Image (cartoon, rainbow, N blue to C red; front, side, top):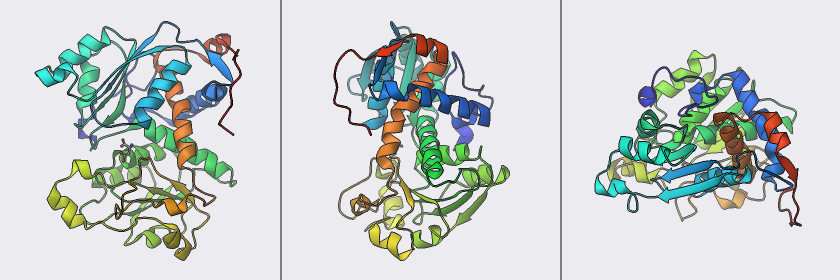
Length: 349
Ligand code: ASP
């Protein structure tokens, strides 16, 4: 899975593309999280910021998306920028045979940053190679989804802190489609920046974790265990990270082999494993159709459910990504932030 990421990606910073979580080290990760903390009141609409006044985002989504596209776009808008957007192949000139390189060069000439989602692994790196502005990978096929991993790590850290624990030394059960679930690949690599993490993996047959991802974590001193069932994966876990079966990425044959039906994680499975209090995470969307083999909505009243804190945090993290790529310092943010002049009913706690 890592083969399509250029080997020598520079650290993420001003004027740089964000293609992989491998562009972070521990220090730059925490710097990004500090920026996310700083912009929380802006994300919550308690104050308004114009630091990106005049900047234009080109948002190119060639694959279905709800929260990733809208949270990237609202992040840019909340910082005072403007957004232009195109979704799907049908309404873009790619339907006329235009190459990724041509599309990217053209659109980057209209924008100050691009956010790109595309169904082919490695394709966002191709966009980056032809772009004259920073390109943010919003998901390239089964490859990577760096902004999701960043918000997952950020959320996991705060959920664990509320329980007087830390990401260092935690145990995480990652269950579901581990092969095509790009969020798992990015998250395991990013969590490898922590120390002494134990990963307990469960997937149906044919949907196993690519060996190079386990190898990546093990090479950095973490423990990765394959388990036979969700209850087995939950043994000793602080958190369960459940993922959707990525049906759109697999052949009928692979899907038939995987033999997926029923629920992946539900209230009863958690209760039987003694894990009713566990932190529950999911990148979303969860597949709520009958027998979809996903996280059941019967867990929604459990105290550890963190899936909507993940989505809320997605805005902060994506704001921090733009601030970094466009070279805005914390001081520049503070200097361009003021109290909102209108009265709003705040929805956030
Ligand atoms: N939203 C996530 C992604 O784009 C997870 C999913 O689609 O299952 O990868």
